[in-house]
Image (spheres, rainbow, N blue to C red):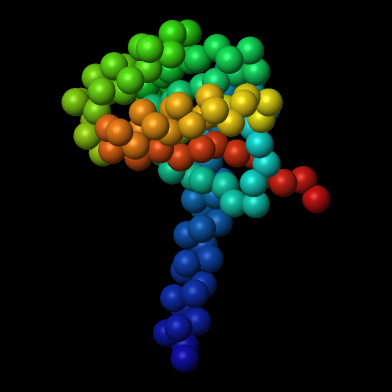
Length: 124
């Protein structure tokens, strides 16, 4: 029983440390939808859709650059050549129509990219 308690305690410490490392370096103003669960995956590639339906992309710690929707797929394909295990984080303003988010999801699905949608915590 003591070993199980030690194991639970170590898991608790691990998750407490990991949760403090989450960084959200958005320079483009995007009001994310709320969600009870937050993702703490390391951000490798960002796709951002702001409230005016402008699209931005960035790899790693690069500054976000504005692109046309048609350029997003080729940008992601180029990145996956260098970083095959990449994750895409989709930052979509909560006012963006559902169809615009689905377009990005389709790009990820067709190319078998790993994509997660960024959210903000629910305020109670």
